[in-house]
Image (cartoon, rainbow, N blue to C red; front, side, top):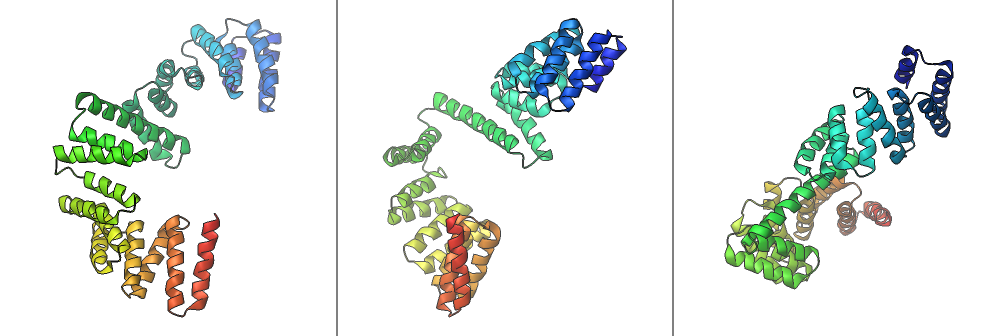
Length: 345
């Protein structure tokens, strides 16, 4: 706004116009945005061909989030003075806020407003271009919730496009059936998912990931025998997959076959060290196998990593059981209190 005032002064404006501009700036500084609008609107009426007058008014509308009122003021300002500093970016932001993402792109590009440009590209269907800009922005603000949200949307759009192409061009391929199976599984339609997964394996018996998905279906329905069979198949196809080893160890542990579960869980931990889900189940297996010290160490690792999650909650509960069996009543009580505290959150 100071720059705008200097522009007015440089043009040797009338005393009345200068008075309204100064009053508008003072109102804005005081947080009186309606007052600023009144003063800048009067300035624009007195000097309809002065670009800065319209941009000043538009800027206050923008701050009020009255985007519909801001847009014509920015347009008029740029029509009168195309190189007016800041006007392109503010117009782009106002257009984007009103849903005119495609039109906003050109203005945000000219302004070099990369973050807003990324959103405009995403919302105008140009997810690939948006993705690069969002990832660059995240380097500077890695925890920004809006950037993370839009990055997730960009990845989702690209994934959707890829899956649509797969379904359109190769509808009966193994990958298309696998994709449909995953969609059915996510929707809770176990039977349809199982049919699609079976069809995918019939077309490509060595397709990795499908036995794992089928095992998850069985596990979810309580069919531990079926789950074990599928997880074993996945582990055979993909011996370097930590998730397959973990799932096999998990189901073996649930079936009471601790001696078989231990090496699978240890293998999973070796393949992907520190995965908290693996550490938790490995600790349970060690406790069941009579190694409370080893179990305690692993449960502590889970708590250190997870802090307040359900995994940490389970680790506190399991530690309480271990300490109780060892006769360490005070420690058992402390862990149970921590478990109860996390449960209430």
